[in-house]
Length: 162
Image (cartoon, rainbow, N blue to C red; front, top):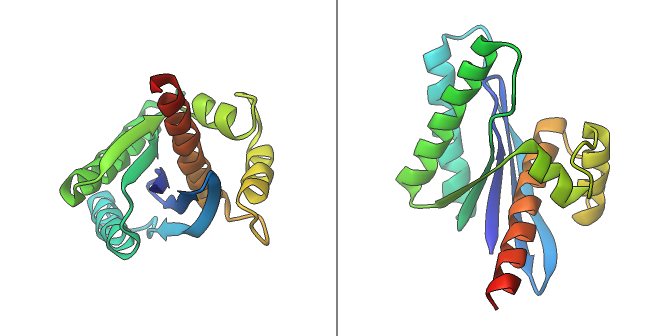
């Protein structure tokens, strides 16, 4: 199963592509979709959509796993994040890809084993689980963690079914 993990953001949207093969996690690619923070917001959303379509086309994932909105003190920031997630979900639907969403707590629990783990802990564990030569950029690492969470969750569901 090939999974595209997404860490939504209006300035940087992280992505990570992993594949499960014979119960092993294989790193395919990761990176960030960087937008110009000085550009109009609708233009940044368009940039995220178009660049994410290219990632989907290049890697042909079966599933897109997206980090869900977390509680935010700033309502404006939460709305901007919601707009980004909407564009990302639209891209998945238009590409014919199944979408799964996970909270930050679920992601940290699946990757580190502790739902309140810090970003550095998540980054180090992603590096270890995927046997990366170095720690990935923070947004890409978070996206890889979302993809790992999906594979772990999928495995658990399959075991329960069967």
